[in-house]
Length: 292
Image (spheres, rainbow, N blue to C red):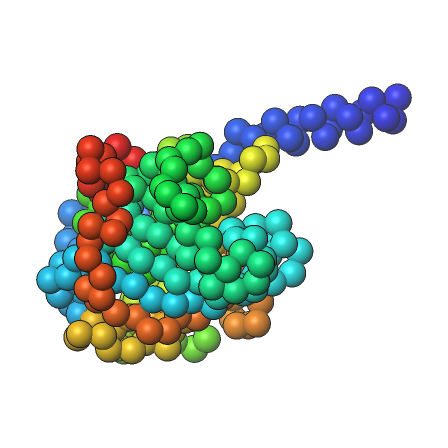
């Protein structure tokens, strides 16, 4: 009887988890919804940060590239890592504002392997180029790394931008701006983001996000969410590019050592290669923020 009761409880809990999705809206947003004043304030704060970081110059360029050293830590890092090894050096190439990108492994036994996306169409380059069924982790990694690097530019163009209140992290005060698509209400298909804009510097130090489309094929994956910390900003052609991205599982952390993975980049360059390198199949449309 006890076994049956435990099984019923476990099954009920699993059903609840599967049906749940994370909701990172603040109390202010939940209580006041899309008030005109908060929409105007949120857009103004986000645009000011976008300009302060120089991202109003981003679309003067077509492509960018960088080398990255990526570290995944702990049990969650073992489960969640996107690349073959928990510590890897890689070279990335991206076309701005698209989902056209490539990664080339630069370390370990996988050195030299090239994998890419062209408007969400996955391919690998060996002796020639082959489009194929996606490797879900690499597909997610390529798109996520691009989105995180271009984050403030992508969020500025979200159709729903609303002021979400104030908060404090490590003794620093922030304005919060929530960005999403379709509706403020949590959806199983659309993500929510909260940009943390430093009140003193006007820069985006953190972004919280949900993870609706997940490469982890397991029940309840849509309840996962996380946060990214942007640091080590360096000016590249007038844009402040964060050269360290620290990822935390679930809530942002006061202790910077409690990260799940950390990306350190170097040799960031704009327009160091022709955009045609990422346009493998000329019949595939360029696309944009969403799968097309």
